[in-house]
Image 1: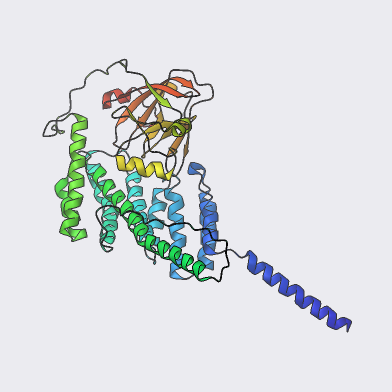
Image 2: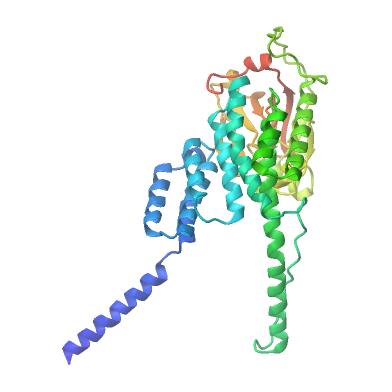
Length: 421
């Protein structure tokens, strides 16, 4: 009898262990989330990320699972500042070999093209021509896949999903009707949500192509030829070329050129650097306080106008809003927040008191030095590839007071440090 009791006890104990282990087992999505939490910008432990991902690749062998793992690897690299563009390209291409959700596939094409651009950052003239011809191919392939889903031109409105409160019996006909209506609303919302997400990525792909081909030397004929070969859709090519031509015209106006760009084969006459002239002071309110009062707080450097994205500057909502507006570069929340892929740089004159940058998913945050002495100067390179000299004149609880001015190439040399170059 004692022997029987021991056998029964041991069997019960093993059952409990099995149940506990099953309860503690993580899903693939949970394990991928653990990897995603390691994203820390330039401080991301990439070796650890790859080690954890490789373990998951051995553990999960189905094609759908492998695709999710490679997607996560590409996501971590791309959202950590694209510090390793070759790795981002490698993981993006690998993930695209597997079955993936359409939205994620378009995102990977964005990561792939962006990584090629970063790998060739700073190139000019013929080197730029070769680099953008290489970078545009994944963007075009992403647009090609978007065509397969017959997306509308504009984002559809999201159908509402109502809430209901019910305190009666759960087996009543009225309760079942409420649940059914709620489920129908949720299902009706899914197609619109999918289309909105796909259109957002389609617009991002179009925007990146337009940005690259609005840089001199212009090559509208080249991108039209490539788009025709890849997209094989006349309407899609026309829409893309409309966006490219609009971007080119905008760039010409910003540079102050006439109908035709200057002859770049002739070395430009070098003018002496212009001394920093006085500019009108601009007050940028602290973002949190401005949000509470519904006031604009994001500065568009080109127009020197404040905008209100109706959300915290570092949020996805603000990022999407500013992309739709096509404007908005910096904000202030106790540190400088650069938006829409703008970047703040330490000027040579402040090299002893550099900015401390923390890359985030939707923005970069730059902390001024602890011993900052005002006025403090810095450079901001915007999404339009335009450089601005910012001088912080005053820092208050309510916000900061600055001046800003656009720099030409000769003026820029006076402020760039070796590290920034």
